[in-house]
Image 1 (cartoon, helix red, strand yellow):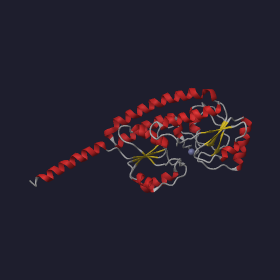
Image 2 (spheres, helix red, strand yellow):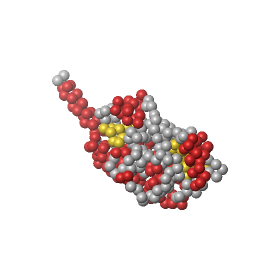
Image 3 (cartoon, rainbow, N blue to C red):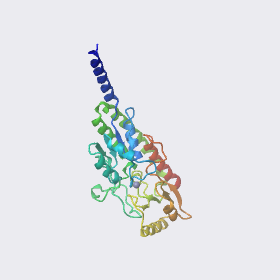
Image 4 (tube, rainbow, N blue to C red):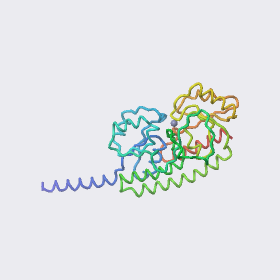
Length: 306
Ligand SMILES: [Zn+2]
């Protein structure tokens, strides 16, 4: 009788191991809400990714809490924009989890990349005169605000997850394709929605919207803070003040990430203030956050500028 026990135990164990390997989704860690949304779409029906950045935090500078460091240390793969957006995450990743796979979205082939702008008042350039071979400066990391990049990254995430979890490669690819189709529809709708307010000058609080501006041909006049969030010098503010006056700018957009006093200081009686949030902190987490984030930026621009 007692001889049976080991056999039963080992077959039970084997069953557990098989069931476990089929059900366990890879541990996926992401950086910001938009990337969490894209990974959520690809993992639909399989599992759910974790997001490191807590609500309201700025990705440009953050200190991880122990629970976030533990999630990163335990990850199978980190999917993130790249060190240009989150230098703190780059340092933590090297220290905590050298073995995890890393998918750096700014490095995905085919990603549209713009050079970071430095001017307070941007040089005007025609949308069709881009010479991408010309760009040698640091990249502007806010590349998720171009839905063409979002669509490209859905495919790259499906590929990366299919590589570490081949059993679910089929669902990953199908989910990515469904998300890409949704984004194509959204892009056309936003193009139509923004048509009446193109060429209305406006100012943003931090230079985080270049990818949206370029994709939808709705260029900002300038930005108060630089693309890494650095505070403006008095000279920059003076340049911007002159630019606003000369252009007859309609709107200044503040951001939930930053105190609104700088934007308020530049607004005059003829200049309205609006809100643009490049991260989407007030939106519900999950796939729907990504299209909702782009739609929210489009709607807020149109409402303030029309
Ligand atoms: Zn930013």
